[in-house]
Image 1 (spheres, one colour):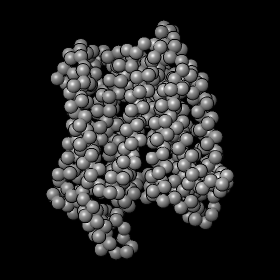
Image 2: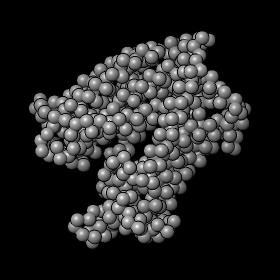
Image 3: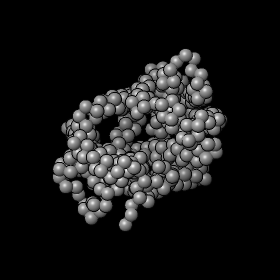
Image 4: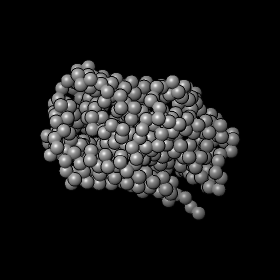
Length: 477
């Protein structure tokens, strides 16, 4: 059997393996329901959080124990790739390795991990990670609802500031560790850090044996909640706004082909983006938390449109004396700063919408709806690539008019999200008034909300499965 139709290139393998880590996020709603309704050892959150992090740690331990992750193993893979001929890349080695391991469930100790075994461990890692993530969100949602009205949102902003601070530190640290010590040390950290969280979870205080509603009662409560105008109206804004955040899918190719950005420069852009994402979170916590939600979205959307339009100047080579790298750095990074500011109003609003006792399922449902909109936006950005010629060959020939047109189009689509800001309540008080209005319920609104949510979950699940069983199905190379 020939496998070239299945595994096209190392980039396809990377996309497939990356999808394995995120595939379990499709089941966040299920994880939330289990936590809300089936306490484990008397705890609704603590025990499941412990289980989730234990699974993540175990998955990386298996990868460490049953395979060789040293740089020698990486060199061996490269050497074997070279033996196949100058016109054959690393992807053919992976193909050959896959052929030799089709009937083997595990990897032989002392050898590099096989594709099936690596995929299994990463899927296991993702399952544990997202299970623990849902538990963490549920705890934050429960505690945030206990805050006084005057300080609502501060707990969430603090928690997410800590979370993104860790992401900001991990991005450059993992790059340095990998370059100095190879992949094995990175996997050691991925195994050890979740294990270090376990003692903290054990001492975490949670009320034991809290009465829980039946699944039927919880479903009825959630149905009544989503029928409320206080839910489907603002969440409708979140979905529409996120769907319209269509990015320029040819941007990275432009940076690499036309501006000769190296992998180090692209990694630097990513690291700076993480830094400014955290700065945006802190800026909202310190300065914008008293602003109305509408004001935050209007101002940041218009600013984002301005900086997106500046990409046209970079394409034309007009950088005001700055190097293309610095100009791109400021442009890309500021978009993440804005994203950090916009992130918290949405999560604060979601917490206010969660019915008591159903924080796990309801918060997971809200975040799933929000995240699925970004997934659709990514799909739309890929479709737009066919309107103008923004191929690598066109860039190499100096044909950049298509890139300019695509940049203007995606900028206009992103800014158009501001047209729906009227659906968003101005403040937490306005949201509460909507929620308390007995005439604000709508079964049609609730049905549309659930239809969009479950359709999005199904779409994400199908895409994730296709990425695994048929890599390259969407046309990536």
